[in-house]
Image 1 (cartoon, rainbow, N blue to C red):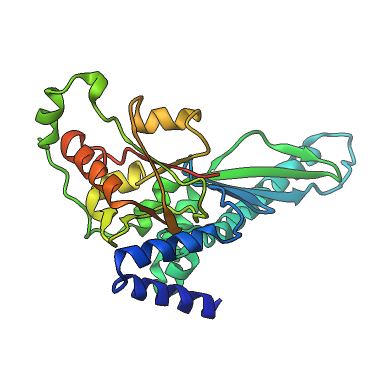
Image 2: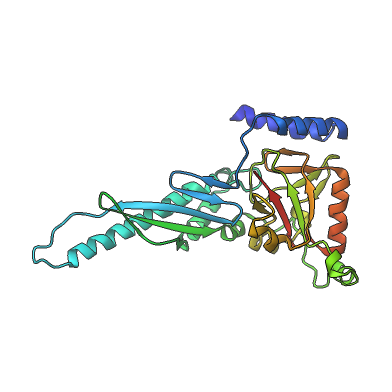
Length: 295
């Protein structure tokens, strides 16, 4: 793991001094290697992380104690079930904490951030306390009960997202006047980057970079409130996914990714200019109307 991290650090250092053409070949060759496509839904034995719908769900199970009431009353049985439910919820919360450690925030795992800043763990425990039940309580074979609890990524983002380094929201952004002069059918409603040919690690805060190494889309493109409540990007498998139109509207600019590195996406300089023009005219980046298609 250490060697792999050093390898990627070397890559990032090299990108700062590499010519655009060599950089293009380098990133493309990385993407072309025999990696398995990375889904934006990460499943584990106890639950899953859904970067597309920005939700974390974990399951907890507990045994229902076997004690027969002496007076044929159901009170003891009901009490045993109630105790088992409480234990299952506690286990689900414990599992949620462990699952959250595996979430990719911005190329760094939440577990790594917790190690660097101990206060994060206590705040996460507070977030777990507000977890809500997902689905129905299950009664399993072997006299067990299972309960799934869920947490929205917006709550996690509120804890992890720093105060500084984000764009300040404007009450009257310039694009409002520009877009009003353009027929609705010609307005770019969002950005879709088709990255299905590349191995991308889904994360809560990815970046889009052009082949000159310039940042096209990142934390300076949107406000902190947008990052927390909406999330910088959405994820989908195809244009038919209903989440696509909900996030980027019915007339998005669709471009092809040309490479990837960890959770970052690379596009051509020509497409980068199209994206910047769409931001100037329609505010698509400021409003986080960006969608990544993964395989």
